[in-house]
Image (cartoon, rainbow, N blue to C red; front, side, top):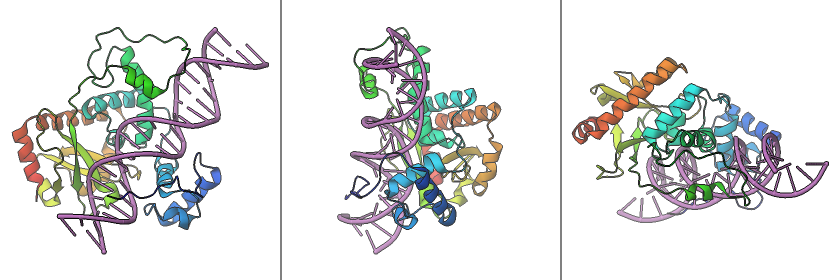
Length: 279
DNA sequence: AAACACTCCAACCGCTACTGA
DNA sequence: ATCAGTAGCGGTTGGAGTGTT
């Protein structure tokens, strides 16, 4: 499969965005909406590749983005969702309105993984570490890249759930915002790794666990999965409003995730659940 | 004050999934 | 069924800023 050429091509700007570029991109998107990233730079008068524009908008310029000040509740939720979902940053970010996958990923790598390690927990597996928590390192003679640091720790075989991509409500939500991934099978039980499941609206009412996607997470284009009893898929935005930032709702959310995963751990129930979603 | 070490995060890269022809 | 184009995701990097010696 051919790959689209990217921004390393001559004549395009790279590196940090200037205020002028930001302004151009913002103005263009406010006028025309996001999407068509490939042709956007040309029409917006930017010497950037579409990919770069998309990233800049998604991670920095979107008006609803919260930056910094990650609360202890968010901290906690990120850690627990990571224990369930692994490095599924976009999914995790989707549960934290105003947060981007990139921010969550960076925050995890710079703060939370250390925090867990210091608490004696393996940030990859969320298991207890056998060795003592890493002490604050003294100065190193040779600068090491973060990747090398990561490689330094013993790789543990982890049975992370295999992601599946679910095509959801394709008829009413544009593709760009409608895909999400679900951890459906742990690797120990996974036999079919990448099964696509349709989610016809008509069927969703018939299962106790109603699921769907939201492209309304603060208009951030992020992907949110929501689970709830008999929740109307069409009203995902109102559902999001119910899930404000307070700790109780985060707890509730977490419980719902656990509920889902419990279902998934039981193949029979999963099958019926999946079957109910199939056309 | 200077040099070095370390942290943080914006941006990039490479890949996969999806769509439509 | 195949292919090309596109969007999105997660991993990685580069460099500015900060801390330490």
